[in-house]
Structure formats: structure tokens, C-alpha cells
Image: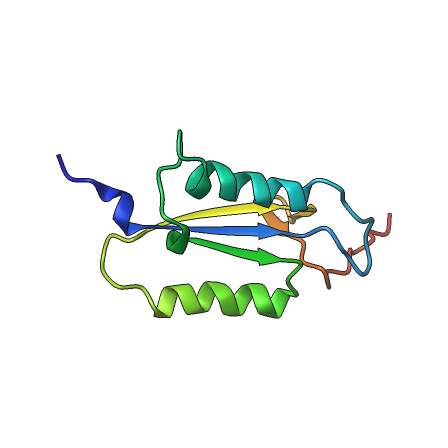
Length: 111
């Protein structure tokens, strides 16, 4: 049986210090717990620390650049990306959802 774990990259994003929205108390602990569970806890960790990338309180440009860097630096076909986000989110239109970065400015709908 082939072990596909070596092809996995975990990209964990936590946002809690917003410029235009309320500060959150959970995302910092969320990304720390994810790192511990996936890469540090010897009893359950499935991945190596180099497979885990963490981005805390990014701007939209920093998040975009980090994802682009991952895409451009991939080593092979069939790579697996686990993307985890903890922070505010917002519906966009009828069928989309957006992750809110530190510089997101919420739109107020007029009725």
C-alpha cells in the first residue's frame, strides 16, 4: 500500500486581530492545537513539522502570496493541500463564502 502522507502540505491560517471587525479569542489556539495534533503529538501526529505551514493575522495580499507560493513551488503532480482557516468569514452573493483577513472591510447592505 502506498503512503500518500509525504505528498501532504498543511496550510493553517488563523486570524484574530482585525482592523475593522471584532477581535476573536479562538483562532490563535485553534492553529496551535492543529499544529500540535498533526505534527507534534507523538501518539497521534501523522505529519512532519516541515509539512505544516502557519500564517497568523495575514492581510489579503499576504494570504494570496502564500497560496501562490505554494502553487508555484509544488514538487509533483498529485500533491495534497489541507487548507485550514480559523477566523471571521462572510457570505459573498448567493453561493460563495469569503475568509476575512485582518484588512477585510465588511460591506453593509442597504435595504
